Image 1 (tube, rainbow over the protein chains, first blue to last red):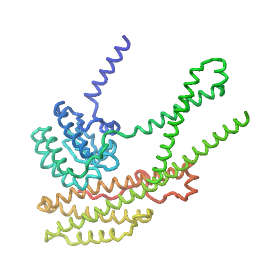
Image 2: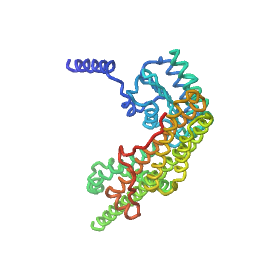
Image 3: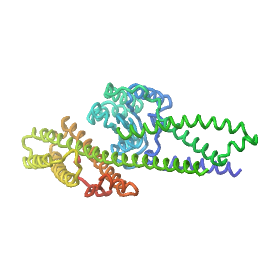
Image 4: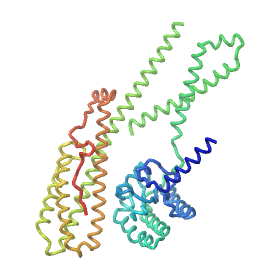
Length: 248
Length: 198
């Protein structure tokens, strides 16, 4: 009963907060989204969002160039261009190595929009081209209240501009940072095993002589030797990493 | 048993030494990386300023098309640009003197450009041209980049100095001759430069 009540209160608070509270752009910087199209105003329908997302993900997959679309209700008085740059850096749009990301930021109620370009794309999409896309492609559609078409054609124009600037590397998008995880896993495992071993006072033989847990100790020893090999391998990996880190 | 014990201590000592060596390598590389980052951001600042220097002659050329334009404003801007160009900044050595001199010269140039922009207000036909509005877009973008580059540079300096000063990296820094980079106006809020504004 108490629980249901608190849930209801929470929901009510959330609704009130959502309808009355000002949209806080700063909070946006802390939450990195999983998708490229982010509509915080409900301007686009689910189908439209999906269509845009599919198109932009295809560009990302084939060229590694990330084009994000962000629609927010208000900037709370922040400068649209400054905020857009901050957003791009906070979210890491376009990745660190090439910095080939673009954000189309639309502050709907402020009637302001901006295209921020990552360093890696400044040659293909300089400020002046971005401004042309805004003035000639997006704004005319927005004036006719056709937000979807403005965004659709605007992103097309951006894609056109950045086309051919980058191609995606071979293993792009498959994620390759599992190595550190495995190293940590093996280190933790070995530490546990060592702790177990010293906990028995080095008395493996003593216990087995008594016929006590012979099976456990036998398989444990086996496991330990396998672990040692694996540990050695990951240790070599670590050394290799350190060396490559040293000379990179 | 004692033999086994000494073997154990040997292993432990070896492990500790290994960890120490790894730690030394990592923190040394960390310092190198931070130092490199300062150089990198320094170059970004140079690039952004160079962009401004490249754009201003275009702005002057646009204005020159108007015959009755005040010549003194143009002369002022040409002088400021020449001065900003002549400030000798080496790409490899990050020195506070060069940084501050350059900032001062660039501020002067920005002030002169702002002066020009105010005068241009009187010529609505000039303001309406595509050439002018294109330059406006480019200059606005450049100003933003200068701001970001300077901020990044200051952050890189602060980050570097912080690790030079903190224990135990300070011992390592002393050993390998990393010294604190002082004299930059890197306190938050102190970095107030003049921006070109339309």
